View 1 (spheres, rainbow, N blue to C red):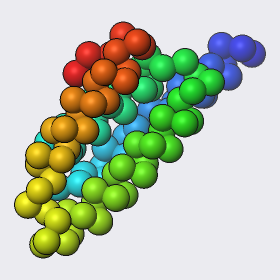
View 2 (view 1 turned 135 degrees about the horizontal axis):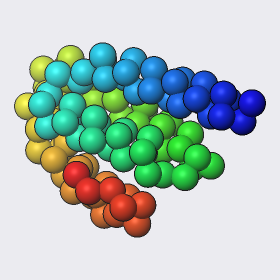
View 3 (view 1 turned 90 degrees about the vertical axis):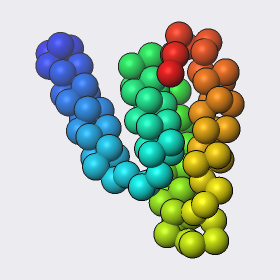
View 4 (view 1 turned 180 degrees about the vertical axis):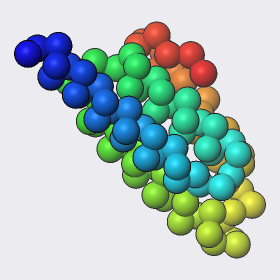
Length: 99
């Protein structure tokens, strides 16, 4: 029964990742960062902390998607996402994530 529950939980996690991957921001640096960051969270962050990280990812994705639709903020997003990537690399390095 334990293994069945673990498989169900894994399938739910994978479907959540797939659903998010289907919603790109539209800025390559942002999409690349979010994909790698989410893979790190799902693969290496302890289960007890995943929901906190996932909430952060969801919020970033929504904010960045909205910003990408705004002609005044879109031009600065490539640089902003690269900067966020560098900052988050340091934050998740303790979990063994490299991206």
